Length: 464
Ligand SMILES: Cc1ncc(COP(=O)(O)O)c(C=O)c1O
Image (cartoon, rainbow, N blue to C red):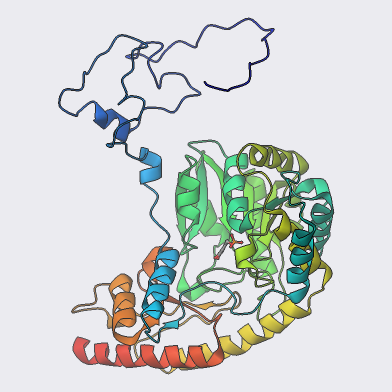
């Protein structure tokens, strides 16, 4: 490679390559375990007319090296669907740029501003002009502050060495799957659940096993449901309480029952607590605080939802120290640290106290009541009132029929006809429902639900 520095001399003797699997010859691209395996897309190159099926070992063509226009994504990356919520946000932006008066109840982000202390800290840091790498796991001071923050929220005494600052909760989740599971392991996921869990688990080779939940039980995973979903291959369980999209919040007693199964089966819990601060009745209880659970739980959190800082990409992950160290190590080779200005903003946001979050929590509680009252008054709509987070997830399938085959068509109609953005329940694994975000101004919520009522009223007439 041109310009590459000379590699230091290796002391150890080269070991022979492992024996190739039957049917493959050593030396052909893709045979070595550390190289990418041939995928369907690569295999299909051989099917192009004129491509030789068999070549002597070690002989490659530009096509093998991917230097052709026909290059295709790998099988596992091609299997990842684009995020529906991002697609809807993009469509809303496009419609608004054309002057349309869209009511956006699709996006899952607070409609509040970043705390001013965070903005000022980032501004001051940037002005110094030394925006450099930080340790991959985050600035030591931020890991300390985040450890104190999560210790308070989870009632678990975390140390800085157990904390990794991630690129939003999303990266934390993805790293947690990689760090606690091996390819082929099974992960239990309550259904319905947030859109990204399945793709992020599958892309690292895990098998997702859905544990259906019941609206009559407030969409909560039960110990029996968890048991039924487990097999010999189950390695981890994902729990998201408060939940996106259902707003369900597990009680301490329900968590204790789940914890019993998790401990008995020696599983790992990945606990996504990103909505911890929006619990409408009672208070947030982290499953990590239950007996025997801190040592088998990876807690996922961050400032996106609690501090209206989605674009800053600040996530926190807390795990037993060896797992946190493994995650920091992976991060040091993949994404490195999150943007240094965001880390300084995070420090300031944490130091500023909880008034900003409490203000948003009060607004979401009021809006929840507003939305529940409006949806309760809509014929054909059934709602399990959310106990937390900032979404409502009404069941609307009584209105399906005719041109509306399911939640995707319904959301399409709401957007095209009423300029109301909502997210199809199908994206969360529950086609009978749609998700509306209440992270919008009260007037927008009222207007959006009035538009929905109008559209559903017309559908009721059609369905008869
Ligand atoms: C349940 C859940 N977990 C994680 C995330 C990702 O959060 P972040 O923006 O911090 O990556 C979201 C975002 O919508 C979410 O709803």
